Amino acid sequence: MRRRVIWAIVIALLAVAPFIPIGVPGLFTGPIQSPGTLQVLAVGLVFAGLAMSYDVIFGYTGLLSFGHALPFALGVYGTNLLMDPIGLNYPLAVPVAVVGVVVVSGILGSVALRTTGVAFAMVTLAFAEAFSLLVLTDPLRFLGGEEGLTLASDQVPDIFRGVLNLKYIYWLALLFALIVLVVASRVVSSRAGRVFEAIRENEARVEMLGLHPFQFKLASFLISSGLAGLGGAVYLLVVRGANVGTTTAEFTLSILVMVVLGGAGKLWGAAIGGFIYGILTLRLSAVATSEAIEGLPNWLSGPLSEPLFFLGVLFVLLMLFAPGGISSILSRARPVRSA
Amino acid sequence: MSSFVLFTISGLGLAGLYFLLASGLSLIFGLMSVLNLAHGAFFAAGGYAAWFVMDSFDGVSPGLRFVIAVIAASLVGAAAGALVERGLIRKLYGRHTEQILLTIGLGTAAVALMGGWFTYDPRLLEQPRWFVDTTEIAGANIPNNRLLILAVAIVLFIALMTFLTRTKHGLIIRAGVENPSMVRALGIDVARSFTIVFALGGLLAGIGGALGAVFFNGISPALGTTQLIFAFIVVVIGGLGSIPGTALASVLVALTQVYVNNYGASGMGSISVVILLAAVLLIRPQGLLGRVQP
Image 1 (spheres, rainbow over the protein chains, first blue to last red):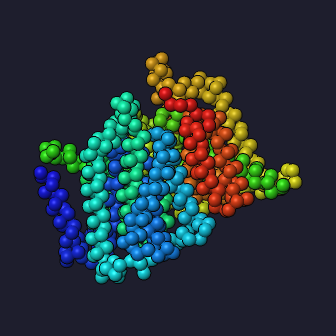
Image 2: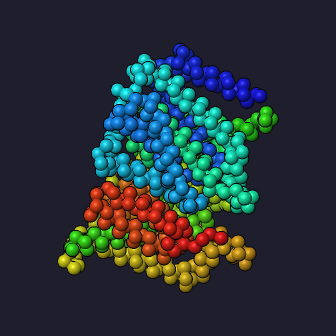
Image 3: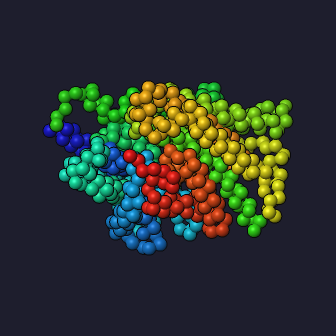
C-alpha cells in the first residue's frame, strides 16, 4: 500500500511540473516550468520508459541484449520517415511505426534467439550495428547520414509545435513512461511473466516442465522492442529530429547503464535509473567544462572533462560495490518493505 | 585482376587484425565465460604505446623503432590484461553478467581516458620508408605494410597454436575451455590460467593495436571499440573458444567486407558481414568450428 502512495505522489508531482515556478539550483538552469528544464525532464522520462522496456528483457527474462538501441532508433527514424516522404500524420505514423518495429524485431529476434548467453549479446549487437552503419553511410540517401533527419513538423499536430507548447510534449513523455510502467508491470506479473523469470533462473528446468522457452523469450523480446519503438516515436518529438547517436552501440550501453544503475529486475529501479541518467548526462557535461576542472593539470583535466569517463568509473564501482543498483541501496536502507 | 589481388591481400591484412583481437576474446570467453568489452581498449592502448615509441625515440632508425614499438604495444596490452583480471574481474568471480557489465564500464572509461589524454583526432604513426613502398605480386602493387601485418598475424597464429598444444599452460587452458570443473577437480590452479589468458589476450590485442595504427593510418581512442564489434562477429562465426575457427572466420569476414565494399556498394561491406553472421547462425548456431555447449 505504501508503495502505491509513493507512486501516486511521484506521478502527481511529475504531472504538475509544468506549473511549478520554482527552480532546483545546481541541477537545472531555470525554474521547473521553463521550457529548457521541461525538455531535460522529458528526456529523463523517455529514458525512464526505455529503461523499463529493457528491464523486461534483461532484468526479468535474463537475456543480455546488446541491441536495444535498435528498436528505439527504428521508432525514431521510422516515425519520421512515415511522416516525411510517406506523408502520414503523427498520430497515425506512431502506431504504424511501432507495428513495423515489432515485425522487424520478430525477424531479427527469431534469428538471434537461436543463440544463448553471450553469443546472443554479440548477435544483437551486430544487428544494431548494421542499422547504425546503414544510417551512417546511408547508401540510398534517405536516412540523413551523420547529420540525421529534422523532424517532419508539417505532419505533427499543432499542440506539439513551438517552444511554448513544450509542456504538451513533456506530458506526452510522461504518458509514455506511464504506459510502459503499466504494460510492463502487467506483463511481468502475468503468468507469462512468471515464465520469463523462470527462464532467467533456469532455462533447462522450464524446458523440462514442458514449456518452450524460445516462444517466451521471443514474446519478451517483442514486447520490450515494441515499447522501445514507442519511446523512439516520442523521443523524436522531444529532441525534434532523428540523430545517428540513438542507433549506436554506445547508446545500447547507456540503456544498460540506466537499468543497472537503477537496479535490474525491478521496474521502479529501472525507471529511476533511466530518469537519473537522462538528467545526469546533461549535467555531467556542464560539470566537465566547469572552471574547477579546467584549472587542473592537463593529464587530469583531460579525462575529467569527459562525461563518459565518470560514467565508466561509476559503472565499475557500482559493479564492485552495489551490483543491485540504486534500488538495492534503497531497499537495504529500508529493510521493512510493504509487499 | 591486379585490383583483385590488391583487395585480397588487403583483406587478409584486415583478417590478421581481426584475428589478433578476436583470438584473445575467444580464449577469454572459452575459459572464463567472460565477454571482455574492454578488449577494444587494450587494442587502442597498444596503438598509443606504438605511437608514443615512434614519436619520441627519434634517435633510433625507423625500422628498429617500429620493432621496439610493437614490443612496447604488446607489453602494454599484456600488462593491461593482467591488471584488469587480477584487480577487477577476479573480484566478481563466478558472476558472469556482472563481469561483463564491469568490462563495459572499464572500456567506456578507458576510451574516455585516452580521449582526454590524446584527443579524439587520430594520431598518425610514423612508418619506416619500406612500409609504404610496394611489392609487385601477380601484377598488383601491394604496399609492404599489408604484407607485414599478414605475416605477423600468421606467425602469431602459429605461435598461439603451438603454445596451446605443446606447452603445459596451453594444455591446462584447453582443458579448462573444455571442462573447467574437471580441471579444478584434478587439483590444477585454473585461476592462474585466467591471468595468463587475459595477459595473452591483451598482448595479442596490443600488437593488433600497433599494426592497426599502420593499417588504418593512425590511432584514435574508439578505433579498438569499432573493430571489437567485427571481432565479436568473427568469434561467433568461428565458434566460441575455437582458435582455428577464429582464424577461419577472420579471413571470411574480412574478405567479405573488402570485396563487397570494393565490388558492391561502398559502405555495404559491414552490413553484408552481419548478414553473413545471420546466415551462419541459421545453419550452424554453434559457429563454424564451435561445438554444441553441453
